[in-house]
Image (tube, each protein chain N blue to C red):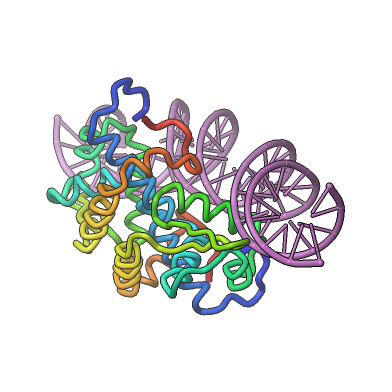
Length: 117
Length: 117
DNA sequence: TAGTCATATCTGATTTAAAGGATATATTAA
DNA sequence: TTAATATATCCTTTAAATCAGATATGACTA
């Protein structure tokens, strides 16, 4: 990093890993993933379930789609989204169990956000 | 989020999950975790291995420590850091394998960063 | 005690992503 | 073709996290 001109393969791979986690670091995207794990849904259904403006939902879906975690299928006016890799749910489940064990510590993680309680 | 006055338990839990992933969404922190998986190390060793200014390393360590993923032990002048929950490595490994399958798609994920190649 | 080494914290600047709102595209139906 | 619905994209603002550098704390040593 800093000013290393030639990034090593390892550094590029770490960047990919962090980018991957970055995608999962947004509450709306996590909720979208969990809703889609129930079964495929179109954007309007997601908007209704999430209570989030359509433009934002669409934008988050765009992120997830470009990153390859979800796929789409058009049916008439609607575009249905679905999870293409179930391992994403493993990842979230694993995160949950790890967190459950030190939830208190995470809650008071001042570095990322002061007020959550 | 936004201005929902009464956050549900579920929403708070999603926030914790995203916060958890946020911690893993920084390249320096991921590299620190992987170095510590080799065995405990003090800050100076990490600074040397990472090639990152001490202040920044210390700050990232602070984040990881407050979040409960690493622990410390003082020995004379040195403070040694270690991973307290090996499942963090499972998480990173899982992320890597998922990514390996759609690395190309992730590379071109324009939403998060335009230029990575 | 003074000095040095190891680590932590603070402050300001830069970068990055999310939010918000308006608008554009595409499909269907009349 | 026009209207209506579904979805996507653009632009500006705002918030947050990283960075960079200076400085502070705390422990050992002479």
